[in-house]
Each structure stands twice: as structure tokens, then as C-alpha cells.
Amino acid sequence: MENLTTVTYFVLLGFSYSPPVQSCLFLVFLFIYAVTLVGNIVIMMVIRGNSHLRSPMYFFLGHLSFLDVCFSSVTVPRVLMNLVSSRTISYSGCLAQMFFVIFTACTEIFLLAAMAYDRYAAICRPLYYAQIMKAAFCRGLVGGAWAIGFIHGLVNTLPVLKLKFCGQNIIRHFSCELPSLLALSCSETFISRITFFITGSAMVGSSFVIILVSYIHIVSTVLKMHSAEAKRKTFSTCSSHLIVVVLLYGTACFRYMRPNPASSTIMDEFFSVQYSISTPMLNPIIYSLKTREVQEAIKKLMRYTPLVSRVL
Picture 1: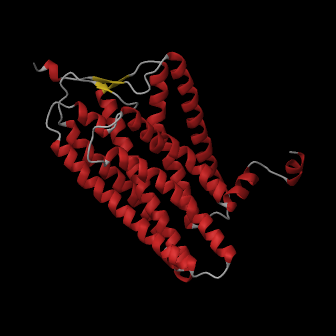
Picture 2: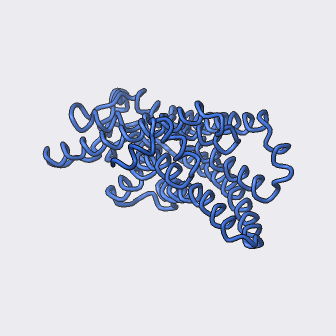
Picture 3: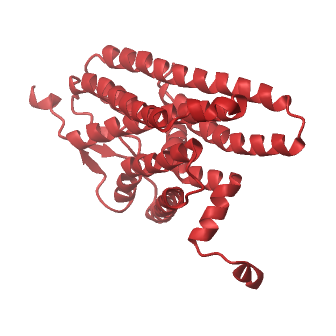
């Protein structure tokens, strides 16, 4: 009877379609992962190598790019492996993936909150911006985001270590995430669920309040501006951040924070793809398209010249 409760591996059945479809998905996800790595690494190189991009906004953007590389790398390589070879993942590997998904997602949530506060300080308190957003304070915000993410991941992983799995080891998803593991356990999962609900609500709630309050002040300040060009530039800068916030918060909250855990497997996969695979790819695209300084820096990095532009 004891052996019945011992699970040494799990089977990830996400994207279990016909071989031609799986081959197509493999190419799609490989392309997304390549774009994610190249896009975010280019952003990091541009910010690090350009002396004009030393403001706190680009400091946070550089760390967001690094975090997106980590976030994507937690999930996508495992998805690619599932599509072409074995779908099994060890018990310890599954728990490790679950921990890093929670860790990186929570860190990104608070990094986005820090970026919202930075925009508030720059737009609403421009005379005091340099005093508020000092280098040490910015490093503290980034370090705090990583620390909170690590603690949040650890606190929600430890209760799962005490759960028993009675032979059921098939996860109908493409990665090991907390809802999928709790659904397989044959022991009481109340502590795990209530722990995640309390900590998750606190994390999402506090960061969302920071973002909401920051943008209420930002919108109020922008509406008082008399220059149409100033309004356009401000909204253009802030819209990049808001798009990223909506993409991450909306899909991640649907997957993790909804009251009823029972839902369509296809919908779970869709929302998980959005926040864990698509968003890390879209972030550098969104910011590079919406931020003129980043566009110019990328052109310089690629040795862009007007002559090449005319030829093209």
C-alpha cells in the first residue's frame, strides 16, 4: 500500500495532438523561444552599452528583459522536449519547475509595480525625480522584487512537499504548475490552497494597488498638460507598461486565482501560453516599438545608417 502512494515521475500530456500538429507546434514554440532570447538579450545589450539609457526606467527594463529570459526558460525548453521526445518529468524536476514558475512570475509582478512607481515619480514629481529614484533605491526595488518572488515560491512549494500522490501521475498540461499538482494529490490540499490564496492575493493585491494608484496620478497629471506633444509622448511611454501589465495579470490571475479550479484544459493551456511563453517574447517588442530611445539605440547597435535605409 505504501508503494501505491509513491510517485517518482509525472507525465505531461499538454499539446498531445497528432504528430504533424506536434511538429508544427514545436517549430512555433522554437521560433517564439528564439525571438524571446534574441529580443531580450538585445534590449539588455542596448541598455548596458548606451550611455544615454542610464535612467531608472531603462534600469528596470534591463532587469525585466533578464527576468523574461529566465521566465521563458523555465517552461519552453521542457515544452520543446515534450513535443519531440519523452513526456515524463521526475518528481523533483516537476516541483522545481513549479517553484521557478511561481518565483519568476511573482518577481515580474513586483518589477512591473516598481516600473509603475518610477513612471509616477517621473511624470508627477519631475522636480524631485532624481532625489526619489536614486541608484541605491532602484537597486533596492529590484532586489526586493527578487526576494519577494523567492519567498513566495518557497512558501508555496514547501506544503506541496508534504502531499501524497496515489498513483495518479498524469498532468493534463504542458508544465508543472501548482493547480495541476494539487488536482492530482490524494491527500488533503487545503493548506496548500489556502496558503497560495492568501499569499497570492497579498502579492497580486499589493502590486496591483501600487500600479493602480500610480496610474491614477499619472492620468490626472497628463490631463492637466497643455502640450499635445507632451501628452502623446507620456501616453506612448506608459501604454507600453500597461500592455505588459494587462497581458501578465489578466491571464495569470485567471489560471491561478479563479474560485473554481475545474475548467477547460484547452483554456488553461491557452492562458498559460500567454503569460509564461508569449508575454516574455512580446515585452521587448512592445517596448522597442513604443520607445523611440530604444529604437535609436537598436539601430546604432545594428550599425544602421541612412544609406542602408535608402537602399532598403
